[in-house]
Image (cartoon, rainbow, N blue to C red):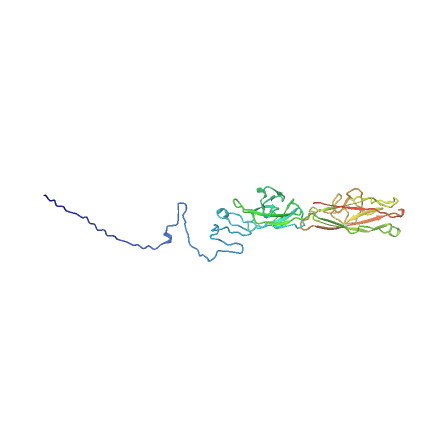
Length: 363
């Protein structure tokens, strides 16, 4: 039997752990700025917060202005959209002011509400007969007419749309309710949404015409009045919303005539060149100093010159108003005065005829 001896070596190491704590006072200026692969904030701070969101009678801010935190803030006058695009939008115009100042039947006067947009902002207008613009939608063209398309030329500044005086949109249907709304743009990429609409209703076309004396009776013509009566007249009164006014024409069915055929002829001077009264006949004058037709607007010289009636229709102009009916509807009165002169040889008798007045409105 043999024996072997062994020596056992057990390695032993002693590790000593030293923990060193270093306290560093933060320095904001030297701190690492928040960043990512896409951005780095160069400076930042915390402002003083508030217990409630900023509000007014028209709006309330949710979270940070410019980026919507939740929902979509809005009111009857505006709607806030999210993202940088909306930060560049022009202000949404409030509802325009609409009216029919002359009881208009085919047009509406509109005044744009700029809603704080700068003076170089331009505006387009949409018009419809439905309140939600779901059908029959058109646009107000640059010349005030209505069209189915909207072009860059139809965007005009507040001043070019008439400013505080406004502009008429024309070619509308009578007795119809129209809704009009606007949108704005200022420079590139700034066009707003359509704003709220206003509405008004066009009226029916109207015309009222009266003559105060349906029958004229001249005095007996004799030597004591030099066979003349010039004291009779008619007042012609017209009320209309015809935008371009009206003209009243006059004629007679015949000269002054007795049942057995005797006549007093119509005065010889025509409507185009009335004269001071001379000779005999039946004639008229008018106090309309701005009369249409040939011969000059005040050719009757404030009712002192005379002309004879014609018999051909529609007659000659004796009173008119060229319009336009803008601030109010037309309401006029003119006086047509008559004169008759006979001679001492004119046969006695009852002389009659009919004066026919025809009024023609210009719609």
